[in-house]
Image 1: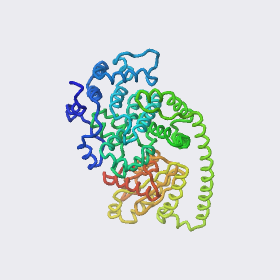
Image 2: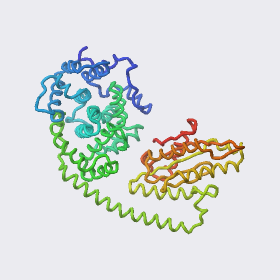
Image 3: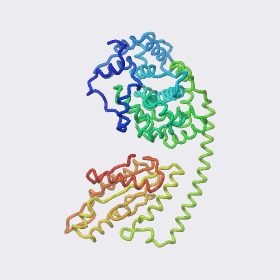
Image 4: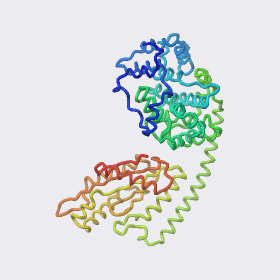
Length: 515
């Protein structure tokens, strides 16, 4: 097999059964991509490396033998292996086999792919310089994080971070000037993703994953690219490293890095992922590695930053923001206390459900509005649980409405005993109940839901003719972390939607809202 064959030729030799399923895309976009001959192609050597990586027992010598057929790639691979990014001793590698052994399969694959992708140069309509700068910063940051959080995945994380934005090249190849006119620019990555979602129904991360699947890249790498722009709350260390790396790259290249890193530092402190000192060490290592990495990848080195001063200024800015936030929080707390005091003089029936003694729907919605605004201001967690007792109409029809009322009263009493002190349980209507859970993330809310299901399974809510009557429930949970909710009612609707997902799948279960 010679290297003058195209990557498409090489990949088409593989049996279709070995091709991983591409990330889901809107049908129209997927059809257009499948028919477009101008999309970025995998370099021949990289296609061979991918093919070999899928073999039962691949050997490093086989990878080296493939790469040695491409002298230019061999020289770049040696340079990468001897660079400060990978050299852990003074000994220099001089052969392709030594380079592959030092880099590992993931970094070797990254080098083979990246050096074959479009490079910055004069006359390029797309700002490839900035795109590659972001890629290099993200790859180095991801590698640094992975060595601390998941060292066994450092190679995968480096590769995923390096090519996470390849979908931008795909969309630019697909629509050219039309694509560039639709997006704001490459400097505001979140705005770029929103614009892509608006025009294509998905962002470039999913498009990049589609291309990675088309290239037959490893499934784990394809998945990492698809999820590269997700939230930082992800508990999977490799995915967290990739997602955090692109935020660091955006902050580094921002017009005001201090302000950008201040916002990122706030998120990291809330997640207890990395403190200011560790962030400063990461930036210091990036500062040292970027010149050689930029030279290796033939791009202009990203601008220098004074990492120590930047982190200190970010901490000071964060302190000032927190002080102002504390003042607003205190004012809102006083407002909440005043509102609660004013309601204490109202008739209790205006706030409670006449049958169960729980909060009624109107009071639930009033309290949710207060907690929702407070959670948004303080960036605290907030979850809502929607509970619907299953087959309640059948129970009423069979035993009578008074019997059904007793079931509701007994369930309300049990629910009141299970919620925490700060939670608010109420009857939303009929056999539907709502629980407001301030300062509660989705995982904590799920613990309460499990407790409710266990209680219903073990304790009857009523007896009929001496026989215990057990009732099950369909439970939906929505949390502020699940989506960008603009109104309190949207949070209730999301929990309601999640609950109906349980209804449609057979009832008696728990479901978390997913956007």
